Length: 280
Ligand SMILES: C[S@@+](CC[C@H](N)C(=O)[O-])C[C@H]1O[C@@H](n2cnc3c(N)ncnc32)[C@H](O)[C@@H]1O
Image (cartoon, rainbow, N blue to C red):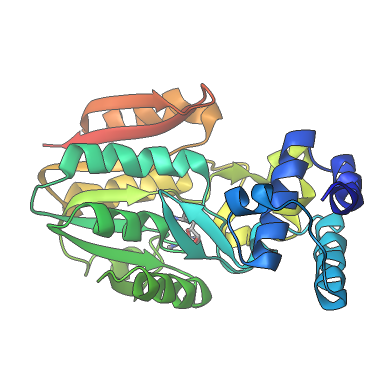
């Protein structure tokens, strides 16, 4: 194993050591079709020529900064496996915390939920799987993302109402129903922040999922919050994942629109990352 692992040392040029090591194990378990525990128990590993060649190809793609999730075509989210492609954002651990907040608030209750900008469907599907009495709807502007999300719902045995909709299109969005829960992890990175971003995100993840104009970073929050005023039931709740730089501004925006009981929460990295607000 050491010899094989040594081939992956070059990954440490572009990833921190511990991340490079996890990526190595993901490649090996994908290649051999085993778990990490099984892999670690193997005394000796002899790769066939074909396996060795596939491993080299994985390494070559990784060295071009391609995300490991695109190579394995899957990502883990809240204990389930989701297919991801170049058309969907790779689900992030911070978003699991947002989904968990909703599940904690609503599990066991009859409710309707709308996920705006569903991407791979990770939030919508996680809610449907963990809130058995919820009726879940999910929308996205991207037809390609919706194809992936629908496949993920099928694989995860969930019923979700999917629809293609541009949430910024006020006329079309007004035809949507009313919900107990509206959740969104919308695009929130300013173009100006591109400079600080890693190539594995910039070169491989969809720009429509990531960026907002520098001069209007709260665009989606304002539009979705306004939509929520007419499409949330009384007592319904809005849940947002947010840009850590705009916690207070987003709270103020929601407060100005008349939302109540607004809570700003930090993520596991200590950054302002999610908000819950109530429509009364
Ligand atoms: C940050 S990604 C979130 C994806 C997924 N919900 C997650 O948390 O991993 C934002 C999503 O919003 C979608 N989106 C961007 N603009 C939109 C719009 N105007 N209307 C609806 N969805 C939009 C993108 O296609 C993308 O899937």
